[in-house]
Image 1 (cartoon, rainbow, N blue to C red):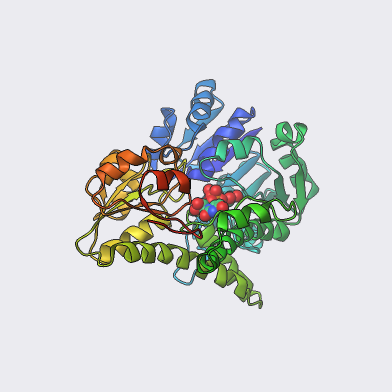
Image 2 (image 1 turned 90 degrees about the horizontal axis):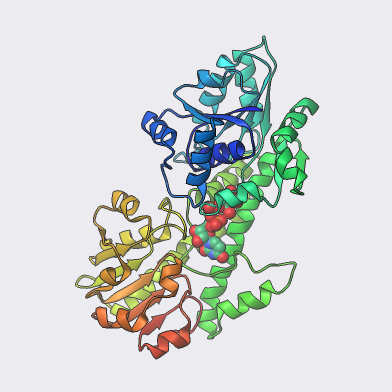
Length: 434
Ligand code: UDX
């Protein structure tokens, strides 16, 4: 099937390369010509494990093309809109790019087609898109559908090719049929396909992200309590997670969730609920606990070092989570800014996200290895649980540092090993020791 993909951000590129891998003829487009040129050369514009191999495969096979304008998608049977939905000052998602892209796809379409919302959008967006599209074209049938992505950055290729489920919201049977053809290779392998009306699909996506964020914040709130009660939040999460109804995933306490989905989608969902006349106060609390989780780490650093003006602090990990170079809403950068505001010198290392972090926080010094970052520092804060930190040589770390103080913002280290290395240790929601 010929498929169009508008915008080549995280969601768009992964959608394009995986659909080409499934055998479809895919054309991607973007307003950023430089990004398109990079993609045509088979190079990824950002770090996502496994994506570059599929990109090369698609480009070399001729099944994956990147074209300058939406005109190249004129004969696509399905076009996925993967543009960004950044937050407005009010917290609502800005849907300007969604509207513009959909209208342009409709303007250029040469035959009956389906415009699919892939970006996370508030419930009701499809109705607005449909109205804009039908004002543009009434001579051909253009349907609107919702097919939210559930991709985790860093695992996006696997999440696309082996998803837990596929969700399609539509109003017409022919649209469901067309989307069934798009995903036939996956459904044939046993992936469950949920077909709902459009509003349900839009809401379900928000509900999933909000519930996952709720789990993380629940774990973080528990960590505050565990510290006061001399309990261990990791053990509490293990006990909770053994209950199949709860599940262990997303119960890791730490310095908070980040990324381009949870923080902004949560606010957008709360705004949407409020517009619909429901005060979803629980979601505001989830966001407040998340901020507190990062602030709690700052308090630990201050507790360990007292005044920060003359101190040098190392941040290990800058990306919002491992296996990505994305620093958007990264707790590590929020902490870096707080430490810099307090007058500390801050040096950071991340296996992938150093350049992006520097662009966001220019006063942050970036170095090329963990050991280099630790050199002559008074405290190290582990902010992102990259594997290479798990296996760090702790005695060498101690030798490099001025004060051997470690704040483990992701509970990565084994307390016994840390104790054996003679470090002063501040984990999250577990007993500290020196
Ligand atoms: C998320 C959703 O998982 C995905 O389905 C959706 O489509 C987009 O948003 P992503 O933002 O890539 O994906 O990251 P995810 O792996 O879900 O982690 C989100 C944040 O929560 C990260 O900052 C992570 O560090 C944090 N987190 C996660 C915790 O702090 N504790 C946990 O136990 C799990």
